[in-house]
Image (cartoon, rainbow, N blue to C red):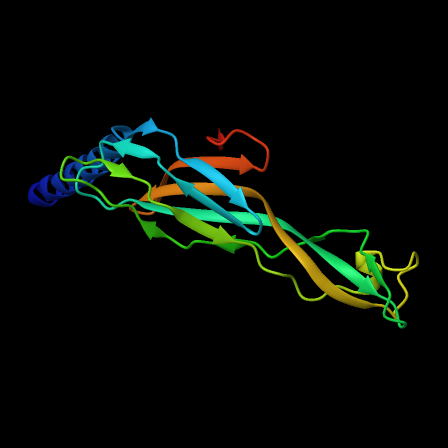
Length: 176
């Protein structure tokens, strides 16, 4: 019984040491430079952030973008009219990108791009064709625009840092 109790105490102590070590490792990670973003039509590209205190543990970045799609309307006679209502585009993601790290535990964000996609073709009414949105109108995609983005940095599945960006906002965004 005494041996079992000692063994149990040793296991609890080991788990606590591992948990404390992991927490301490994450607490040591610092941002040396915020990543910046550039929006261009349907895409956004984040780059340039710099982190230290990573140790030898891989770090990943994931950029997700949201935006809008605009459409043109063509009536049965073939006359063109711009749609009146932008439609939410399908968000796009870069997927997790391994950030290159140096031997001294530093990482710099390379160019990471994500692009919004066209949604399923909306109806003429959704786009605002012909006032009442007659079903006789043909809807054709005009533009896709990325309007906002979020960049998340993770290590061992835990979120270390997060930034939100918006078209026309600060290129360094705001922390989530």
